[in-house]
Image (tube, rainbow, N blue to C red; front, side, top):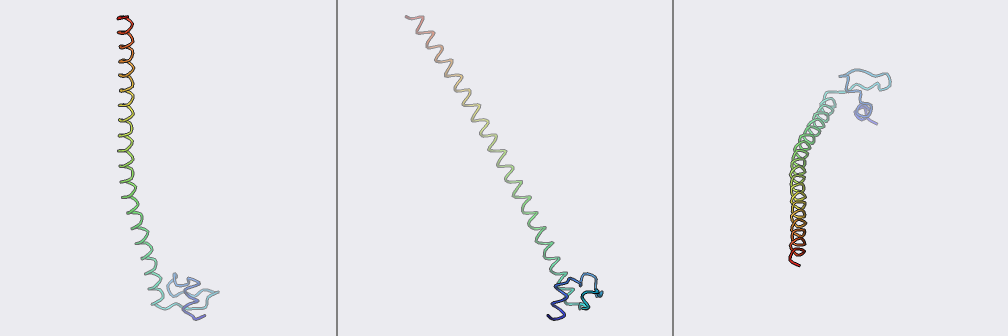
Amino acid sequence: MTNDAQCLVLWSCYFCNEYFAFCKVRCDKRILMLLWLQVVANLILILGVNIAGIFVYDRRDQIRRKLFGFIRASASANLRIQDERSKLVLNMIYAFTIVV
């Protein structure tokens, strides 16, 4: 294993050109730059995914609320129609009993 590979595997580059007792490898500037670029890339990726998640969640919540309102209005309309039908049937039964 080369010195660069040992340095990447053991992550000794985080302490900016420090020596570890178990590593004995001094990291150079380009490996430090690669590690920092990787950290920055990961942060950008995490931030982007979280921002996209916020927008998707917000849109999904709006759709869910709209659907709930529609279902509630539909259920109340069905109950109102059933009530009117029952009143109509009772009125018809009452009218039929009076006529007969």
